[in-house]
Length: 304
Image (cartoon, rainbow, N blue to C red; front, side, top):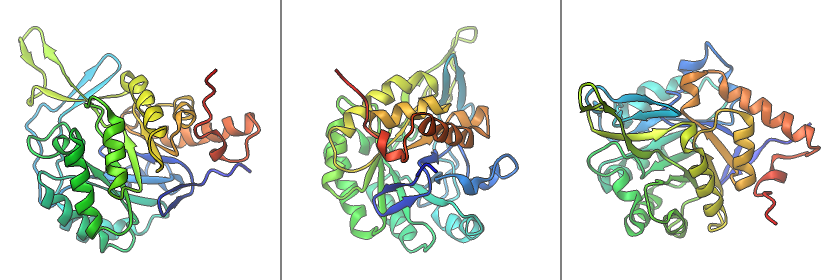
């Protein structure tokens, strides 16, 4: 039997397959399609201190090999999550991670502090990389000093596993990764979406209400792989890889590049069963190559 368990900070996951924030709701929306208890973890929808309506429509657009989104962190706020959604999540057996977003430093601190007090949530993913909000979001993730400051301040009030989600929209992602590691991050996850845009040529207008949005899907995978490989060779904390993963082969490539776990995002919109299919495919790969543990292929890329 292959050992699929993987450790992220103080978090021991039953397997390395996580569904990405913003693509899988709170998990319970998918129970008609798969047994979500089999997932390594579910990273729930971005949660902010206060209710957010999100951006104006249209805020999604298809591209030839992916999608653009500009949802803008629509959610009902952390208190609603704690009081109305989280009690229902306690019925499930998998691990839940809350993606924490904000527009200002105090937003991150106060939201993280509230989640810290929730007994069944063992980790947060600090999103300092969202490109679809006018204030905060990616602004923290593209400057090493700002990234370090938000992690430092959140670490003072948050005492469980702290994952920091990094933006690819930077000159050198390794510098940002090292900065957040130095301030107490237990892991980094990458990549968030790349900034892109779509134009309606007939109307001669932008497709998205925000003009630009976050690009995800298969088109970003080579960039994500490169960044995961670079960061895994820079930091001493686990790297969670994501970006265009839609099958087990994609996932294995991220492990070989150095990822300790992977997240599946855009592919959930195409096939709601993809996460468990990827999990089964990873297990098949390990058995076919006579490995006994997922840890044996992490960072095992051969470079002559």
